[in-house]
Every structure is written in structure tokens, then in C-alpha cells.
Length: 382
Image (cartoon, rainbow, N blue to C red; front, top):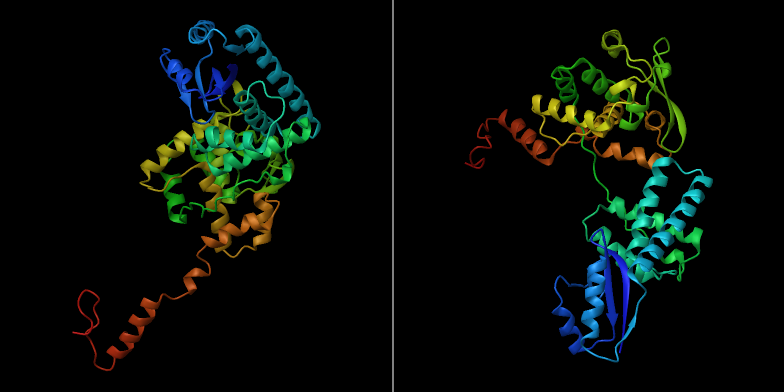
């Protein structure tokens, strides 16, 4: 009987797996080995990949049957091969992505998914569609990652297979799950004012005000340089944002006194919001003080910096701004992306009358004719 010993990535660690044609005696013998586990996903018994466990596994297998054939390299060789295999492919894939002029953020994300996939299928040189599905089931869906993350992982692997030509299947059959459609959380105009009033720190208040009044992404805010704020023209230049696009956004006149006060007090040198030693301000710091301000303002909604951007777009739409201009201000490449705000804007919805309101209005008209028994707190019919 032949038993194959191989390495693979499982539960974010390297493991030593065993695979063989089903044999009850061998199965029961393996279960007696200390610290061995069964992986339903990979259909194999496995141990943590350490030199000691490798030796223990080999000795244990050799105890059951003298003519057992073990298909294995040395542990060190097989770990070195795996490391070299993964690194070589990842390095080449990185060069490929850079050549395609993908952003640093996209490159980092795609390399991370690809490295996880290669570690999950350690030692394999070609991949089937079921290999991809097993990875998604175990590492993405199994770890309860979001649909958005799942879609990114599929995109990364499709691009990797196009580059490496290691897929044994038609890439057009590899589909992303449907995108989740959520209505964005939006603050009311009163809640925004409360949030600003109850943010005590001057710098924090200025950051919140600028994100909301200009509809900035948090990454755009921390990358914003002082040279790109044009006070005379009431404009801000957002450089090379999402999709490698420059765009202008508005600088609200009402924010100018706050802006002057902040600039004179903190005296930033390069970036609008600077952290330690003049470096970019931390996005995590912004999320932290925003959460603190929401608690002080007694806002129960789940608020993130992007909520302020959603609120900017929704309030602009409610104020009568054309959707095309909002699309330009937000930097959306597709009008469909901006259309989501039509689902939360009250501009047209408030004109629609509820059937209950219509019924009550009719009853009130009847009250003028002597029918006064109209309160909802008791039986209207008497």
C-alpha cells in the first residue's frame, strides 16, 4: 500500500498531510497518533509541520506494515521547495501586476490572496476548478469573509491564472458571487451638526467637517496635501484617487473659519492632517475619535468615515443637485454607483403619501360634517 506524505496550508499554518487509498486498519492506526487531526476539506489526516512530527508520522506508519510504500521527501527539502515555489511565483506575479500598472493597494490585495491559495495547495503545479472551490469554501466562506472579499479573491486568482497558465479549466467558468446590495447608512443634517458641535478637539472637528463637506474618502483625506487646498477658488484637488484619477471637489465656505483656526493652531507642514513627525495621519485614529464623537452626540447608527461621504452625497441629492454633478464630485466612474443614493434621499419620497395618511385625511374631512370619533387610540368605528 502506498501512502503519500505532503505539505499544505491549513488553518493559517503549515501542516503535514497523509493521503492513501481507503484502508480501515491504516485509518484506525493513524488515529492513535498523538496530535493528529482529520481535515474534511482536504480529506486527509494531518499534523503540524515540525521536524519532530514528521519523524513521528514516518515511524508510526512503518509500524503497521512492512511492505508499506511511503511517497515522501525529507521534511526540510519539501518545506524549502514549497517556500521557493511560492516565493518565485509571487515575485513574478508582483512584477506582472506592476507592469499592468495596478495600484499598490490592488497589488497588495491580489498578492495576499494568491499567496494564501498557493500555500493552501502546497506543491501543486496546476490547478483545477475544484481546487479553487475548495480554497474558497475553506479559507474565504469558511472563515466568514464578506462577499466583497470573496469577489476580490476570485478576481485575484483569475488574473494569476492568466499570468501563470496553471489553470486546467476554462477561466470563463470561474464566476464571482453576486455583489451584495446594501442601502448606505446616512446621517441626518441635524446629526451631522450635532457631531461637529460635540467633537471637542479642534483637529478632529476639522477632519470630520472636511470629509463631510467635500465628500472625501478617508484615504483621500489622509493623503491630502496643503498645496492642493485652493482657498481662493474654494476647491480641493484630489490627486490620483481610486482608479488613478484626479478630480476637484468643493471647499465649503462655512468651513473656512474652522480651517484657518486649525492651520494657525497646529501649523501642519505638508499634509492637511499630520501625525507623528509630520507623517500622514492614521486612518485608525480617525475611526476612533469619530466613534467617540458619535457616542457623545448620542448617535446610535453605525458610523464610519465613509458614512460622512454617503451623507454628503445624499444631502446634495436632497438639495436638488443633479446626479451627474454628484457623480463627478464623488469620483465615481459609473453612474450606477451614484444611483444608490436615490434609494435613501427623501427629496421625492416625502412627496408620496402613505395610505394611512390618506385615510386619516379623508376621515378628518368627514369630521367637518359632524363625525368627530377619529382617534387612532380607540376603535374608530365606535
